[in-house]
Length: 200
Image (cartoon, rainbow, N blue to C red; front, top):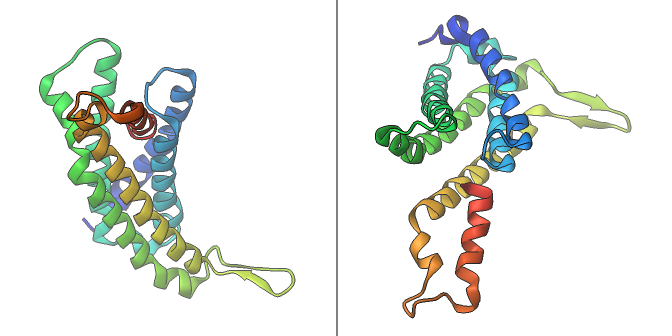
């Protein structure tokens, strides 16, 4: 587990770089996913992999790197297999179920693992000064502070994404109709549409 990055680090960097093409696929309509959530997820991985892990050799030896790679590959294996088969019109009930539910336990664990990787990297960024720089007029960018702010954003973004996806997948009925048979002023379908737009 300690030498995970040395064994497959290059492959992971290549695969994650290629995954950026998914944003192009969404823009041209090849994939039906929404751009913003996928952009944020890919950006999150690129920052963790290239900025936090690759730049600090000490972090590459941590067990959390192996855990992160397992979670990322598990999610991608199910999601890309499901998407590929959907494009050619093939559907399997088990794979569909995994695609719709596997993220519920795995994605929060991914966020926790990414946060732990950042936490473990902070002492090394502080001692090495990597990415920290001085600016004119007695200003400076102290990168550990940037990582701490990103850490807070990671938790907030992860919570919003998880709750949004959970609302979309588990609460369609009360958004569509009220006990009287309709939602007042049509807000239910409208709210449902907003949730679908950003989280489905």
